[in-house]
Image (cartoon, rainbow, N blue to C red):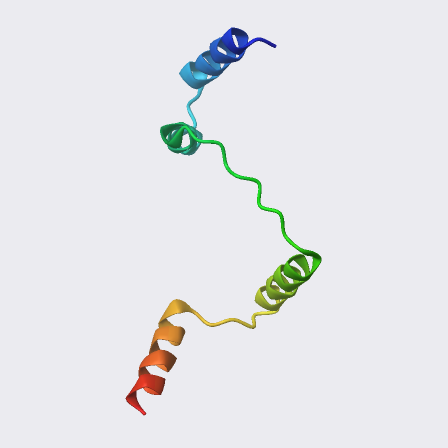
Length: 77
């Protein structure tokens, strides 16, 4: 598919869309006009991310407010 054809299809879909969230997301994406860099992670990094995601799913996390409170308590010592 040529660039011109892709542009025509995108413009058509955008004009027809009634999904506000989608339109805002597209605008945000296009506003930057830069391709996202591919981030290559090591096996250890992938494992750490998966473990962290599991901890979150199990409810083992602190909210921002809780971290701020603990930090303030720690700094007060």
